[in-house]
Image (tube, rainbow, N blue to C red; front, side, top):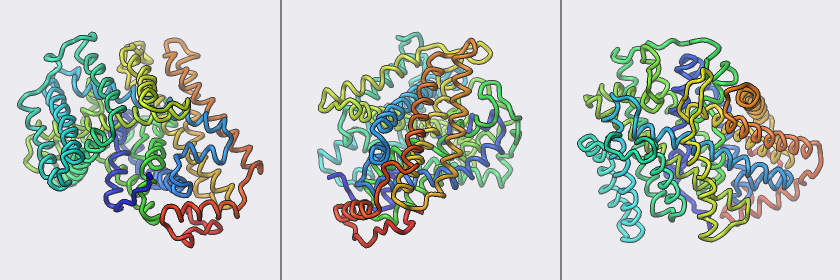
Length: 544
């Protein structure tokens, strides 16, 4: 019922749009500003090729070889039920972290603190509202009014780009928004929570799917235009490197370069969220196993390119900007890169902000829906009531946390996204390590070679558990920390250690799976999915 063979080019667009939220933009900007651009660049290039790409394609193949099951369901097959429920709880908490960070960042892009950016923020707010409305109309046109896809694309794609111009003409600035929750930013936080709720319970065809389709055009235009403009500007001397290549081994807020760098630059080098996407939706659209590598591994590499473009926006700075979010730093850089094509810098900056806000909205409603799925699966909730209860439970903590005042190491209040980003990065990267642990357990217990998974697995587990330990010490042991960040980090660490202990116990020989059972199981899957059984040979190292 769920298996829909899809052209690999179309599937690549879906997969890349799903994994490339604002993470590959925010993380590289934060790390580049904190430690210099050389460490961040090295981790992006090496991480995407040797860690993130391995993780993504392995998660996809693990799902394909198990009838399209999610990585959590594969975990239940090879580990104990306790490990399965621990992984579900871990993923749900990770989704909450994502929601807190990106709710705050999206509201900041709509209602910036800087007076200089009020117009750009208002333009992005107007364009984003129009964009969501266009997505709903696009879904109705295709699925209810039966308009051909190509005709709908010809009509709506230009309208999406026209929304940028409309936003510039009639910006919905922060001083025009009712300060019903303490500020315009607080008002946008509430509006965005409402949007996430509606997007989670509505049918996919009405909002999420058409919005993803239209956002793919913005994403491709942003990536292609930014990369081309970066090259032209660099060759022409319009964008010279000015920012320090290396700033030191310590940062006041992030801590030491290791492990901070490897959890700050999450998406773009390695992201556990990708395993949820790969095993959740992409695996059910793969027409042929040979498409797995270009879709999953290639998608990770292209996301690395986006991260490099974001880092380049830092490289051309003369000094660290004050009062700007990473989203605004990226948008300003995009304005300079696209300016070489005779596009007005302010219009190019708004385009960059709109592209990132589109990524942010994609991340918000995708994570809300995934969190709702996991909550329903954990408690066995079904039907319309289950959808509403799961969505409310997933949004309750983020809705409260965006209004909590969080203090930094210097005792001064800092934005919620900035305080929570290290915890978000640590849990997201740890989720990737745990997904690799599930893959490793599958490969080992079915008699396949698994050495190529072991190195990235060990590196990510050690790095992220070290980071979580530091967060627990900083926020629970020392004075002045956040009990929420420290408490959730401690819970995540305990869940991860339980999973690791369970995997080690199973890999010592308990409950191993026979090769004959694997051959029968996987060949049966292939027959049901339309593959030839001869394509599956468990005795060969097909995964590598």
